Image: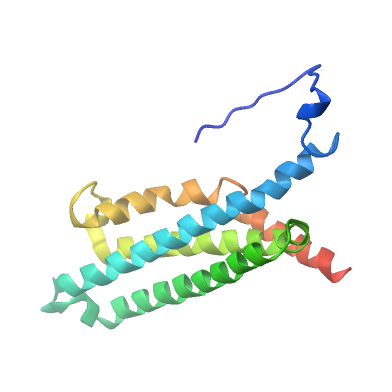
Length: 186
């Protein structure tokens, strides 16, 4: 999606078109970020799993030094670490999704901003890790736009496209900590 900078000067909005309370529009936009971030989390988690699945399939087919890649301990370790991160992220995603489906809108605004921010950082960092490890497993095939490494090549290019919009990882981590500190002081 494209982004651009716009400004409004001396704009009059009819009362019937005001969403929420006057001069409180920024808060409405901020609350909407939870759902946007959730969508990004779902994508990053799924793409991480695709990297894992493709790596497992390829490691069973490819042979080096007379044995399949999957038979090399270093490759199994890479796959195990990918699986560990993907499954942990998926579990956290399911918990947050359940909370989004069972909490009232007001409760979500109060309780979920921080956890969703942290989960977005977790999901995109997991995606980046899985894309990198998949590229290592695929070797040179991970750099070609076609063939066996096509999915991995494409996903590796897409990592930053998910990590930056709706709040970069650094901003998400900071927001998560600030929200936790705020709740602790309640």
